[in-house]
Image (cartoon, rainbow, N blue to C red; front, side, top):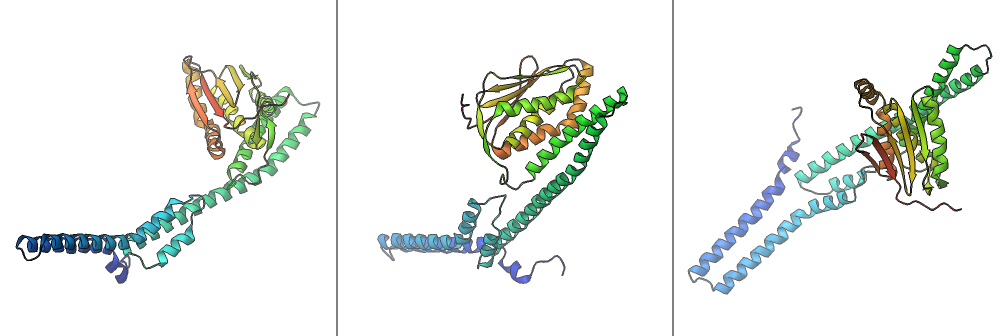
Length: 330
């Protein structure tokens, strides 16, 4: 009948608990018999105690033998890597002569790991393919906007529209770059080198200033310190760029300060208390909170802790700490 387990599987299900119950029931019977024999002087007390100890040892050996499949599965799962699940190990354990309950557990883990692996693979493929496909139209848009900027008879409205196109293209480029990094199964292929974070930040701040042209927002790079990293400058630029863009989207007016401290980078943006600014800010959060989500994933991926906090003046601070900063040579 459909939906019913095979008969052999149904007979084995729950056998582990049943066998353990039988072992302890037999031990209890032996202890009771030995106690009665000692109480009725049928056997010496020493002999009764010896019988109890022997029955306890045999019970322990029986339980230990029954526990072997569970212990083997526990050892397999102890070194389990969610990114690279050991499917062959599960198949080997399932192929052995194990208890029905353990076999059911292994089959469930195998199915779960297979589904998770499939989800991750589909997400990586989609992100990678979509990102690569977006690069071609982005290149066309950039080339076309550059050619259009050379037109002498372009109206003021045309120039404003062209600047909006360029800003949107720059935002989309940063998003595609972040997608390409996150779509990699590991950090292989990302060239690591020694670079000064201040130099990379200056470039990202210059890019971000293009996004606030015509807005009452000022972006400042404060550099009381400087340090270097041995990492991928591309990843560092994308992470800091996402934090800066998130701050720009959250700020209607005021000054955003990007600060370089020894071993950390902070982005400080003011908060506005007016109702109009608050409503616009909430709408901006709904639309552009993805920037912060990407920054979080990058910080978790490359183990650069990201901390968010607020100051007494309602200013918000996003700071990234880099565990292994290097001094900058003079």
